[in-house]
Length: 243
Length: 243
DNA sequence: TATCTCCAAACATCAGACATCCAGATAAGC
DNA sequence: GCTTATCTGGATGTCTGATGTTTGGAGATA
Image (cartoon, rainbow over all chains, first blue to last red; front, side, top):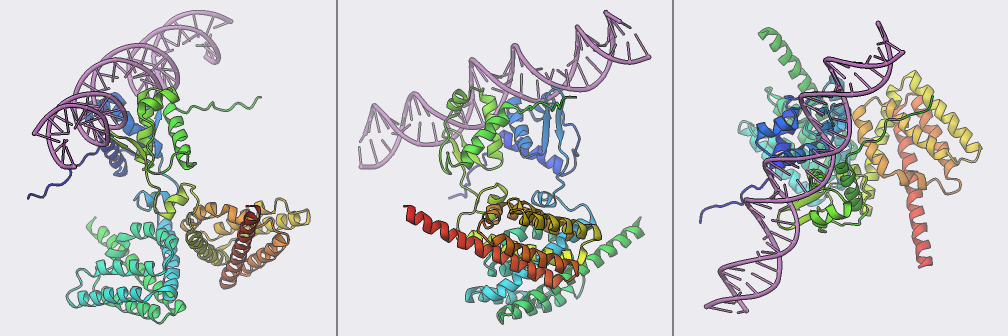
């Protein structure tokens, strides 16, 4: 018995929409740019005009492009809303934006830790302990996969808070700060320090002390942020040396 | 000089997408339902197939419907994500969801008040004072427009916090809790009580006391929530009497 | 009853035609 | 010289007919 899987069946229009959308996301076509005419795109992509128009209309519907009769199709200006860009997997543009998002994370995750200390049930605690054991093990064996357990640990705490809204609010923020999280673990000694802080957080949750949990979590995140900033400055000076 | 405005120029496809999308939002077509066939829709809407397909493909692209070859077009199940439903102006489904959203608002707006106390600039404070004067005036003259200034007051505080991310995170929550806010002001004596709390919040911000500002804001919101719940129970019992 | 065959319905795609719209060039009128 | 009319090429908006694929079910068959 060979392992046959259902063949992918994405419509042409979807593929085209996906292609154009990636081109825009990757900056191949920038906001304000005029896309090639429909006829030209049909030729390049080897598809009929209806198919192309279904794709373009879809992108227009989600506000990614604008179709102007008699003129052409244009890439729309990027949303000014931070939340839109974050949801669209776009990165932050300025230091102020990064700072704001970081602060939002600090607040949300801090409060979530506090709620977790109040609401964690026995099986939640058990799960946290289990992840903690994995983290300890990882650290003793080199720590190459420590960052995965780190993410899992924070995620598990979010679920202890028993508030779906807070969980979903934090998710996109976590996503956009992903590199922020993983990059800051590459410096020597960082993981050991982070691990000590993780232990404190877990202890606070375990002892059902919301204030202590919030404080431990905020301290932990602030440390990560500092490390990240330090790392950024190192990279900058390295760039300067190389240039 | 007459006031001429640019004429509206919405394409047929956009109108059709809008119509179908409203029908779904209003529950005329429910999740799982099969839409009429393309031919049938073309007939009722008096449009060509390409136009209709551009509309349907747009709705399919945002995950509102699913087009299955040989079968038909079906309405997709509503998103399980609270945040999606909130962004799509959908209302909450269960008491737990309302509770979670309320708690998220409490946390966000509480922290925002604290940050406002730290970061409000002279012109921000002036604006808050100005709104406060309007609120006082409104209250003395019957208070029919008090709720408008109430919203404006909370909005102004959000801007004092100087954090765009927190502001945008709170916006949709505010939207979905709009009735929550306005309905709870219809009971006699409520506005006077809310006004006293507003004064306390402003005082805390003015004296640059973050802890006091957070506490005042949280107390205020908790009061509103209690009022709302009380109101809900009143409506329920009234329904029971009428039934 | 179970299975197979075949067909109508429904979406996917294409090609062509015509309408509408826009920007720019050119011409006409003052 | 300035405004206005007209033309024109290119681009999107819309419709229609034809063909390909997929699906579910009706009917035939064993």
